[in-house]
Image 1 (cartoon, rainbow, N blue to C red):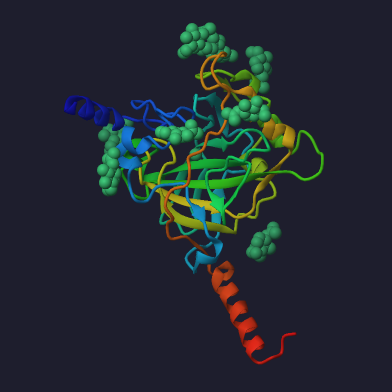
Image 2: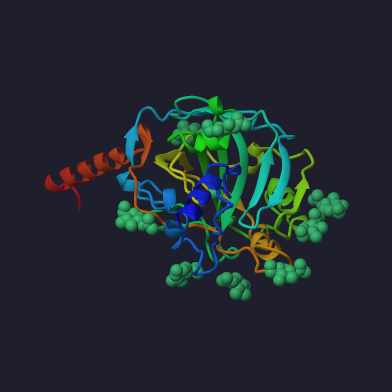
Length: 313
Ligand SMILES: *[C@@H]1O[C@H](CO)[C@@H](O)[C@H](O)[C@H]1NC(C)=O
Ligand SMILES: *[C@@H]1O[C@H](CO)[C@@H](O)[C@H](O)[C@H]1NC(C)=O
Ligand SMILES: *[C@@H]1O[C@H](CO)[C@@H](O)[C@H](O)[C@H]1NC(C)=O
Ligand SMILES: *[C@@H]1O[C@H](CO)[C@@H](O)[C@H](O)[C@H]1NC(C)=O
Ligand SMILES: *[C@@H]1O[C@H](CO)[C@@H](O)[C@H](O)[C@H]1NC(C)=O
Ligand SMILES: *[C@@H]1O[C@H](CO)[C@@H](O)[C@H](O)[C@H]1NC(C)=O
Ligand SMILES: *[C@@H]1O[C@H](CO)[C@@H](O)[C@H](O)[C@H]1NC(C)=O
Ligand SMILES: *[C@@H]1O[C@H](CO)[C@@H](O)[C@H](O)[C@H]1NC(C)=O
Ligand SMILES: [Zn+2]
């Protein structure tokens, strides 16, 4: 027993991909024997911790923090930054060529962008974002994983640093109206899904779309911040989370492609659906000082005052 446990932990230390951080533990989303309720048991070292992600963000509880300045997104406009797109059996992941970095945004130092991947439910009607806002779950969530630059993209080293990783979370919402194939960048991205229907499939990506293109329409000056973890085993508590307030809008047909195209194994395995971790206990969340609940409290205070003075109604 203890030999096995030691071996598992030794294997954990060798993990190399962030979203499937721990391949030594057979974790899953879809079976009672290995779904997220079991992760604290089968990957107890970190998944049973006290700053686990995702969380529900309670907007009125988010405190203003003047240190949460604007980000600088370096090379996010590069149209040749995407290297490969991969079906990992747990998600769809895009590996980046080097060269994209983020800084500012209240981060202590620069981080190098490594990959993006997605979480979803079952089509556009069963939402599957990981974070929720005041209990609202969005259709999908995009995660951009960044590694503190001093770690030189060594994810093992970053996973042992309490702020070694910076994850950017973007909600994806169904675009209103009956548009199809929008935005064009998402039509391009999803066009690769048919080539990676099975676990382990990978396709190289042609140049043409940038991260800026995928994040179209989101005002990246508005976000929430908290300290949390990877949302998949081994759940390392190494992540500075940034969750942007405004969602990316994608047409229903493209959102539906994720849950109808890619499988968790070979062609006879289930489709990849409901690939998100359930909510974990709340953490202290901050937001821009100018956009915090203090503004709400102020207006509530003024309302109360005017009510007392009998000037309302
Ligand atoms: C996850 O597993 C637990 C038991 O371990 C079960 O109660 C629950 O229904 C499962 N959830 C899913 C989505 O399979
Ligand atoms: C998880 O942590 C709790 C509280 O620290 C502890 O009581 C429990 O035994 C742990 N479970 C596992 C499977 O390690
Ligand atoms: C997902 O949705 C499809 C179509 O509505 C349905 O047939 C399938 O059973 C659902 N799968 C899960 C795991 O909920
Ligand atoms: C990555 O970091 C780990 C832990 O600090 C270290 O043991 C390992 O040698 C590093 N790997 C490389 C390729 O530098
Ligand atoms: C998918 O694979 C086919 C056959 O290898 C190839 O011709 C096509 O360009 C690929 N599609 C994409 C979007 O990469
Ligand atoms: C996808 O993976 C399957 C199973 O490993 C393999 O047989 C198939 O050739 C792969 N397809 C592509 C396009 O790489
Ligand atoms: C983004 O939001 C900030 C803060 O509300 C605002 O000052 C700025 O004008 C917005 N930018 C765009 C492009 O809408
Ligand atoms: C698909 O995977 C299942 C279970 O992993 C296996 O039993 C089956 O032989 C595989 N089928 C093919 C065609 O590879
Ligand atoms: Zn993720």
